[in-house]
Image (cartoon, rainbow, N blue to C red; front, side, top):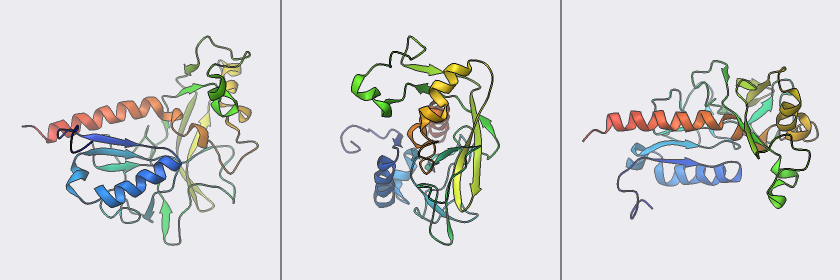
Length: 228
């Protein structure tokens, strides 16, 4: 791709879970500290652990690629693992952990400065409960579309509890309660039965709109710094 199709343009790497783990290896071996880092807007790697020394933004899994801390920063990495704020990670949590002396990084795409922020969430029927196989919502799905945007439903911020760094997600009670329960309830997410996974299945969806805007801002910043 870089040799034949990129033509010097910036690029973004996006993965999740196993995909994020593979991209972490790619960044470490091919991009970290090389000229290619200057073309990378960001590596978006939720659902895995990207480690950094405690109190620092770089120096763990990557020697030169830092955590993204503003929407004008490029050549950086975003990573998070999400849990409901009322059900924090248990001792057997599968994500958000790091070896001694390191921490698993957490960057909130909706609030990179660390402040609590509302999410621009795009949710759909739970594919992990047969959705992919049938490629349509179940009969009791309350909408004519497969996906729904619910402004104001979710918000969150990065926290640490029991040695686990995670994106704590708050579900706002109130309007459209039945629909909210269909897309963000404990049964829909599965975190009541599989607490060690948290909100892993929708790590990306909860901040999908925020990621689109963030990458657009990073692209604008990159272009401003690479004027011909």
